[in-house]
Length: 360
Image 1 (tube, rainbow, N blue to C red):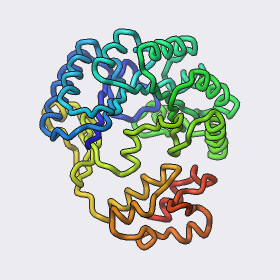
Image 2: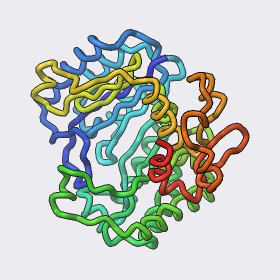
Image 3: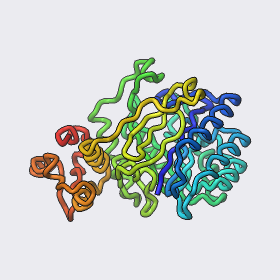
């Protein structure tokens, strides 16, 4: 079984915090890009059955009806399984009946909508727009079009934001009743407007309070906290993202996309000039057995269920505790062993990077 990620790098506007490969939408460039994307897929995809497909960006929903038809022709070359989870990222302002009809025709059965916040100050900081009534209307449109699996993104940790501001946002998000909520604390990355403006992150203790509130509030609302930043109604966990966290292989197509195929991890170029010349790959390397085990630990510990010790042994023919110093961390209660799993103590999940550094 294969999993596929496709990157569409076009946006109608650039968010202040985004460091993904992206450019402002341009009709001529979009057509040229989709033609090269088709060539990359043709060169690399080996016609395995596809279990999960994710189209992200950028803003895939900003493509025109004609461009979506070109994208559909690429999708039609994939051998999608009957139960394939097919996710498409949208901005709320792009959603209309025409888009939703095209996505249904394409085979999309899961939407991921970038709302981020309903707070005017936060939205102005991010360079985004969102009106609750408009979002509510669009969500009803989505449901009426037959989409029953929807994720909404929430961002917090914006400068000057407080827990009380986050509470208002989260209450509105819950009124929309999405099947899945992805939460992100602002990280100020290089080459973003936030970095250029010299914006500062909020204090760590305030950010921790926000994270703990998000976890508590969403769990009380019936969402399963299955990964450090992701919450789902039971059975609605993202199958595609679980492929990453389970350290499984996947194709990555498009500008700046990453992939992991036949033991090789690779990253595509972020240069439009190179990509349009057919020079897709920026670098690739064969993953060593030790690196593979390290990735297994780093990724699996993002999941709240953690690592299954028997599955680790079956996969690598070695006991986890013989390779990584888990026993001292279990003794200090930073890691917990229970029912054949090792996972990060929920009290320490927010500082999981410190624990991973001790392991690897």
